[in-house]
Image (cartoon, rainbow over all chains, first blue to last red; front, side):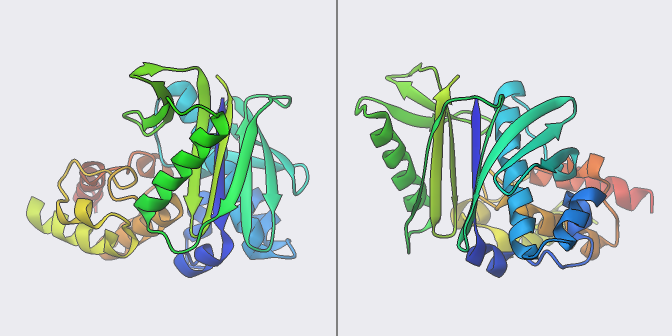
Length: 187
Length: 84
């Protein structure tokens, strides 16, 4: 199973003021806040940890079928800027992140050696829905099948379908600001 | 506060963060913040902080965990106001 999450750093700076009172306390543990405050680039660190949590959450929702909003329950452990783990209760997820000056992108998997395909790209000036459609089309192109469709189930988990029947891929879509990404793995 | 008053207040709070105008216009108790209104999850934190400020309450993480829909938010606000 796979989950991914992208944060457009310019968009995040516009949309979210993480210095707002009580903001960090709602989503980050004391230890995570320590990592943020000791980071050279605090903005980048806020969103790196956030994308790790979101990516791991997306795997957890596929696994257990239950949505929730409690980012502090998702505990990050940063091994390097690239590698980390996220614990949700007694479950662990492995994360692989890419941090640039423009975006932070994380893919989360159930084990360290999972094979997956992921792709991250920039599109400027599309609205939420057009961007979402474009992203699905790009992902189907990557699967190299024109007879497939992507539909979200009741709790928002995307599934690849072939004329109403489910196929055994795990996939994850993400877009934020001008950045889009998808990740595909076997279930 | 009546149910309608509470919905109106919540509507004002979520307005700056929504990405789906149509779902916002047709907002009901059943509306989901993320799936319907397309609120970015990082902004859901802002929604919760704004709710705390507006009603002068504090929402613990265990309560926040359920706050994915208008209905759930209403239940939590009412519960907190009752114990104030």
